[in-house]
Length: 183
Image (cartoon, rainbow, N blue to C red; front, top):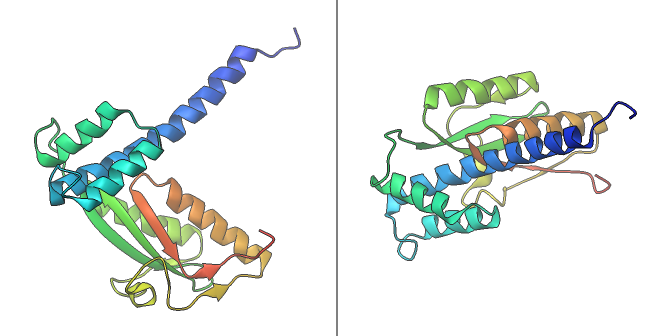
């Protein structure tokens, strides 16, 4: 033997994959719970719930987990924690605008964590409405965009996006910059 174990590698890979799936399931489950709480447990009458269930199915979330999240949102299931939909707005290290949708059970904890992520990247968390005008009325289509050509700036923005995306409470991230074609 050369000092390695095939089982160790398999176990490590499986652990990483399970961790990633767990994060995705957690995010989708929160979205289902909030959608069911706000619009009822019937996906035919609640488009937000229908969309959240479609995302869960795309992530290959088991049917019983989906049903449990719906029941939790309608008050039928166990668990008394409440989730809140929140929006954070901020600026990247070069003044790039960010619009972030999150679902959390603790607004104070989440805002502190998001502020910390922006601070580490050289950006800042903005006040309510500070970037919303850029993304109005549809967040996916900003009013104007910034071209990123500096590789150092691109690297910092990529790290910021990764940190935000890896946060358990963050559901959607919108920004107003275009990445270079070769990236």
